[in-house]
Length: 145
Image 1 (cartoon, rainbow, N blue to C red):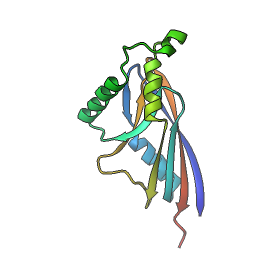
Image 2: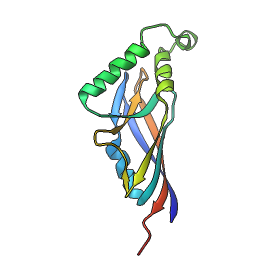
Image 3: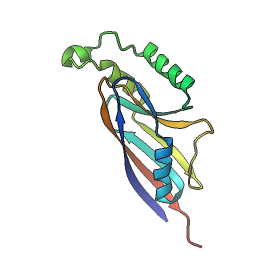
Image 4: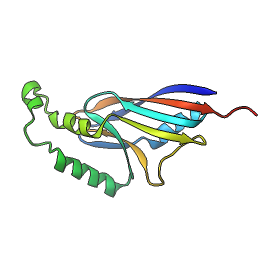
């Protein structure tokens, strides 16, 4: 039977570029839905955070942080900061490029991530936040025999 299940994850972040592994928490919530074949969509509310996938190991995480800083430096002037004075213009630009959502296929009840692929939250804001990640699982439960 086709089903749609929704869930919310709440994640506390710090100031700076947090890169947090959400894979286990998301996989657990997907498993609870009992959907065997379908699609997971994740969305993070807010304009200073993003979702992506990466091999979550310290070398790659540090490489990602350094690449983001090279592409979107924190210490350059941003019009947003001049207008609002909150100092997080860089965070808005970073989040816009990395995007707020992900879609991941589900097969045989499991997320179809690669062996070294994890789901990560990137929070770029310059103050601690409580982030809400909305999940929606669409698909088919196993038919009773």
